[in-house]
Image 1 (spheres, rainbow, N blue to C red):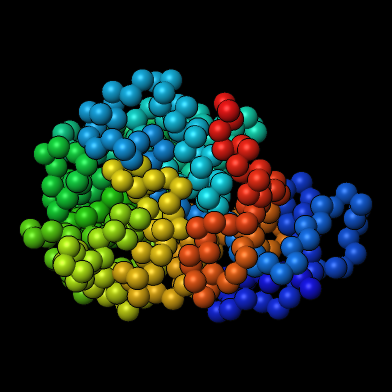
Image 2 (image 1 turned 135 degrees about the horizontal axis):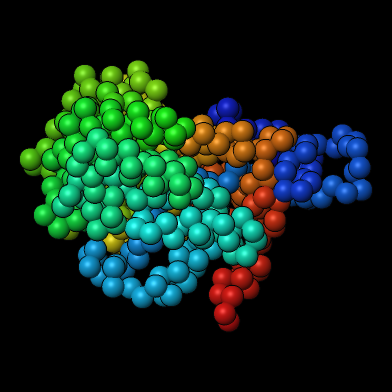
Length: 403
């Protein structure tokens, strides 16, 4: 008896497979065929289990503490405390099965330094893609992180600064947000010409652009500027999120070479019903927003905005369960958004996102079929990252290195 391996192109689990062969952190083969130097190949015996690729959260903020509610509180955290907390969050994410995460913004490139420690094996954590300081307007959303610009020259300099720091992506705040005082999510912060300048400057440096967009006008401008991912896509109007849907714009989004990263998280799961036990207005609006995008073929990638108030960094599984409900997706489509589709959108499909020979040995060992019930993702039996095996016992021992 072997394991069942989910191939992301399939609608169901594959047939029983013999052991997974791993060498130097990479998948060599699935099956029993003889391999050169087989005495040096690690064989993982996973009888009766289900294997899926490691999960990807396409929008996190490692610098933010979800227990704090204002930028002022975040900025008051002592440096040593903050760095220790970031390392703990990264470890918790890995142990929850999140093996790749795109950090969508911080203030001093601390996440870049943490990434180096993870790569060197000094700390445990997921593969990190970093955006650096989000580009915003003076007084605009997240300007407390130091990325405010006004002129084309300042835009170019800010993009260069992120590239020099080692950022993989450029992040732009195309609209306002909720977290920053005196910022309104529905309002655009840059006109189309400025967004085009940001995208062109990033392209010259070989970097794709992720655009924070709540307001409908900002979504339209970000789309037409050529960004690769639209974060949130909340279609916010004067009456709140999901109140200014534009079906023609959604059709345009579906035709474009971009992905929507809707940041559906555990907090959304707590807002499905109101105090009377009825579907909440938030659920009705955002469900309609996501389902309309789904129906027109907009491509989704899984994301949570981890770090904002109430959204823990290791809670992607809860976000995926909420995503399934809000968007009316099948579990298989949710899992694709959190594995192969996310890897394609983030430009790392030649490294991870599938269980296939040549790719990094990143996968979860589960005790039942997630294509039937996503809840199994909440407690993986084993997390395998770059070939390193973390079962429940090992994760418990390593959860607190100081202890």
